[in-house]
Image 1 (cartoon, rainbow, N blue to C red):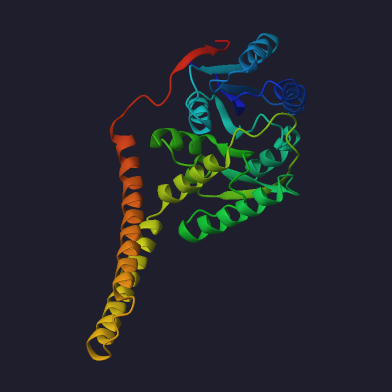
Image 2 (cartoon, rainbow, N blue to C red):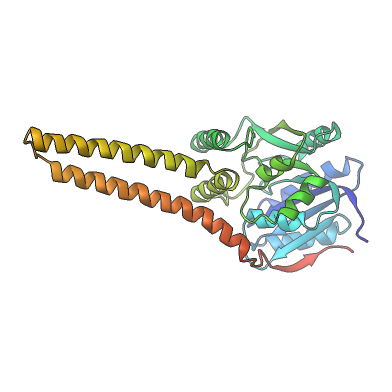
Length: 312
């Protein structure tokens, strides 16, 4: 039978060779000082640099508390975390990025909230060290998510979060493929909480999340938890149809009674092109929801583990 520990720390890794040595030096002393049993699970998400080599060395140095999942390819942060969730032994699970923007020293803050009886604790970044554009873009996205879903998170982009074991078990059983994990956890939680955590500049390297990837992540979040995009589009399409019909009536009146056919044909073409564009947007939204359904029902293997480093 697999032995359990108090705490599991889950860390996805993708091309983080410049950050890993510093992460090791800062993370393990923090966990050792807790005085509780723990494990650290790293998921190497198909890194192309020396990340796996460094993880192997760390496993050899601290094999009693270190486990490494090695993917054969890059499956994304979500799958890297899910693979670890399916293998954790802890009663409490904490997720942490490898880039040190969320300091490991903040972990005790989350554990205090868990000890107070909360089953899910989200972190929100204090004094963010990101660019002005990224900071305000995040605020806008947070606002859109709050208005279109029932998910209440101050900072959905903060990776430093704590989960009780029942929440993790529910996430694993859900079989979710693209759903944003913190939002999914919130939907399963009965007593969630948040806590402010420090935010540092990235220790080294560049972010592995492009602007496009961030947009996709948030689009997945909204479409995964709400039908609001389809409903808003339907109302918008109805308003456009009514407006277009009224405009046609006005043009017909001008032509029949005022004998003014100036630009009438071009106006009708403009209306036609606009309605076609609206239709294409609708098809795209419907396709997004159908695509999510297809990914679930096809039951394709979500990821492939090439190797697992752990002490039995």
